[in-house]
Image (cartoon, rainbow, N blue to C red):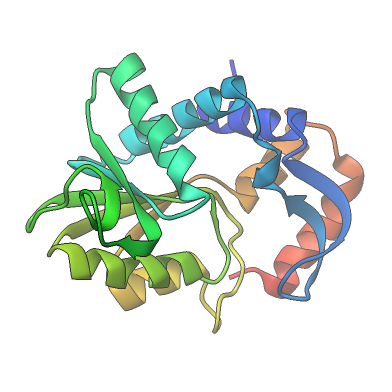
Length: 217
């Protein structure tokens, strides 16, 4: 029986989120794989995706009051994760997300959803982490709203690539902000899934290993 990480990798491939071939990434690096989270477009897809995030949340013992979904990609992810936790695991947490601009009428404020208060434990929900830009953008907004305790950040895939230095963006996040970043899967998990026959793609293994050797952290 496949574990949830292997099921998630199959899920990404089946929905054309995880692709293999020859791609030029935003960083300019030539990669043998590409992750396009924009392919998640249906209710069934986002519901299943939320379940994988929920399993990662529970696996790592995360225990917070509120899930924070940075606009825009993080919004449906935080909502889907909160639904999965409540519906399938009996864990009821709040969720909120930031606006791109402060609303000066109605309820006002920068965040929509669960009210953030001093001392609240929160977990940030995002898709992937390449440079840590999303984390650097959301933290000042959180600090301006309340003195919350960011217990963790959960992402779908840890590319395990060097960030601004020799360490990965995940490692840099911990060194810089003291925030633990958990991923549903890592690039090593994906390589292992190919090796174990969970997904097709053995012809890409040499390129995958070469890319890890050059850019891996």
